[in-house]
Length: 527
Image (cartoon, rainbow, N blue to C red; front, side, top):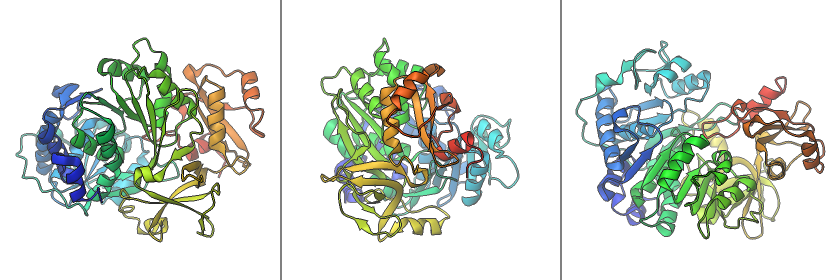
């Protein structure tokens, strides 16, 4: 298997290494690969925003000395709760270099969730910034073990500067089959769960990226990403850089103005981000600096993108044959299926999320009530998956982990069906189902295509179970009721939308709308 150590040596080349040493492997294999940031490292601000992976690797080694000085040892867990920045990955790598297990917690989680997850982690040594410390009350007695603040001590904790200068111990990374990192679910369906990753599972999740990069990218290519750094993709993504050694524009701020300036300067040829970020960037297609013009590959991960967004990205490129690659994925599995679109005019049904075989996976559809495998094309059921990137379980929740496995297959919680050619069609989450609008995701796609002024649209079940629309428009411009009425004439029961500004929508760390939270926000009496 290519995700095994032998397979990684074959495909990754000289950059093959245990996960905790990937940063050093990348620098050793490729030298000072350019690394451009949209904000300086908070743990090393003097490095600025124009740096390289050799400096990044040195920072990892230095940070391992700081963590060791703070008392972190092989096998320990360290929680990292700070604003999104590539230095989160540096701290995670530093912990991995010591053989410790970094647990990345997104600061957007609510205080109760953060505290519950820290409790589940055993109140570990915690690295945080002052904002997270104050917001989540991390300095309170019993919330963490030792607390280190990366940017001061105003909110409590030990100042990171007091730990600098200590020698970095020799590397002692954990074995491939052992737990090497912890992330968490998005929380769209309730309290976030802690996701356990081994070296094998992270290698498996990066396999598609590495192989695709080997086949499609060359030395003149530039990678741009806009990802949240508490996410599994940021951890597995380092393997892509280690294997390919290409210049990397690593952004964490999805703001279109900021992203446009950086991409216009660096002219990336591959751009990867989450679908909702691409949706926010649709306006960049007409930007005077043409920041997306050099892109020949757009890659969105985890969720299905809207057809309008796909079309706008392809239209924004001035390359002869740009490609929009869509990876349907989950943190527990990595990429489940892949699809590719090249037509600027006929995007097709974006809920056709691709072919599992392209992601080295197998998928089956089962009846969620009887667990019977459904073999016929077009029959909707629960999506189950097998593949090289499957996680090691939910940390501290053996029962929930066991309930997710069915005869060696992992049940994703999504509903979908298969076409006769094996392509997978996604219909939504089981917990988000709208009984009177079973294809609610397709309705959203249709309305976003018909109403270009919409920035986001979510269809939920109201208190009575009827479909209800919540919408936001670009720059909060009022929505014309007549246009809405005409656009929804073939969608029975969908009344006047409730309007919210984009930043009023409750989102996950990956900017995906938390439908359950939105339903509670809009319909506070709903159960």
